[in-house]
Image (cartoon, rainbow, N blue to C red; front, side, top):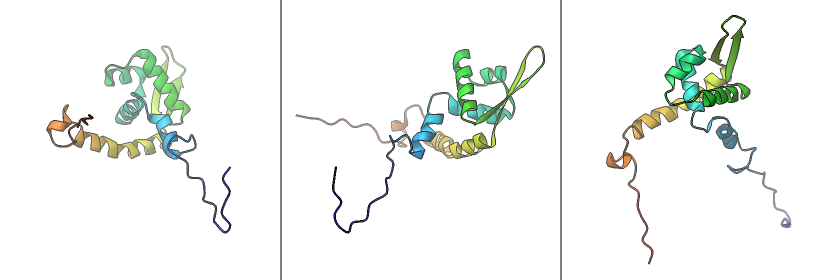
Length: 137
């Protein structure tokens, strides 16, 4: 244990990125996977989305992954799932106010991605530095 110098003011704990209490880490825990931002954007685009519409809007997502992603977004409070008691079952998904505010926060990332990652080889456009190799003897 380190001793504090006489007269020094204790510094408040500032959480690092890996600290589970760090706000950045909590955001990444909610949205940092391949499908969550895509599903959020698809629901925002459709406003009210049915499961089959989401499958059509998101090529490549499996039934299992879409189901898991929707459950995770619902558990995080980002989407609302409404089940109607009809046959066949009708389920709709909407962004909650929290999900809508997250979508607004993601918009600058989407704009940045379009501006800098639209070319499959960003190094050839000058929008990203070309990778360098270090030569060690």
